[in-house]
Image (cartoon, rainbow, N blue to C red; front, top):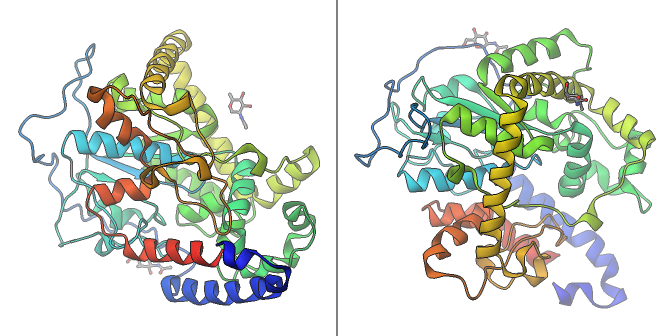
Length: 418
Ligand SMILES: *[C@@H]1O[C@H](CO)[C@@H](O)[C@H](O)[C@H]1NC(C)=O
Ligand SMILES: *[C@@H]1O[C@H](CO)[C@@H](O)[C@H](O)[C@H]1NC(C)=O
């Protein structure tokens, strides 16, 4: 806040005190980090019936031109920094509309990340409890997830080019990794990549944010080399667990394929891009740095390559022509909503967001995440839909009845200190 920012004489204090606070709070909140690798051996004990009764008698209406019935049981493995917040908003709206049961975390917006997921972390969990949708950040642990969902649940996730993901993660989380605090110079990312070993240790606090983060999120050891046979086994394991892997770089194609898999309608996948970063805060990586980042995140690169290939095979099978038509339709309807909902028609910087309800969570000491203002002269019949489409993750979870005091306390703390 401004009192701590003004005056050169406070600069020294600014540099030191916040970090002591931060470390303490982080340690208190996140000291229960689990083992470095999730035990993926299966103990198949699906406790949920094949099709879960929904609390409303009428299921979702069918997609107009199909004879399948919309899927309502979904596991979305929300990876970090992959446009997953936009998918989350889609799932929240779909679940709310059809009165589906979400397995939410308790008191915070993730399942005790980075500890491996446990069914007991679900809010109000009772053994044998069944849910329609699991979608918050977690460290994937299939046997525990499977306890919560009917066996017919669709498992989906999203990947992003590991180089861009690394750049984004570095920007967003670097300050939570104490070893990086000593990186000098203006271009900290370049400094890091020049000699990663100087600022990285597999055992160091929060180090997983800076290497093969996708692998880590899926429950694997993130320090394996790309050519380690285990990496291949992990990829094979994931391709068996997940029915569909979205690719963030091809977001529209991903949504069309998702709609097809779940037998949803176009209306169900309308979206505004949430949690985007202002472009001035994105580091431009020259080819040399990109190559270094790629090598540093080699295991993730291999993972990404594999699922990129299966993604495009799927697009081929769907039909390029049909895909292009569907994308045009999606764009047209998204634009319609943009005109109806968004003041000025586009995203604005955090300080220009008037209603706190629409202000997205910001990284430590920054205001780099964009958000939206709702149109003032909005047509009443679109107001509810527009509001939901624009509501960021934390606020939406509160609206859905999740108490988030740990997350909010941390947010408050972060804003006071910086
Ligand atoms: C993983 O779990 C299985 C079954 O619970 C157990 O037999 C095995 O020893 C565990 N492996 C590790 C590495 O902990
Ligand atoms: C993803 O797959 C497509 C189609 O095979 C290919 O053209 C593209 O280069 C791949 N992208 C990456 C980053 O490997």
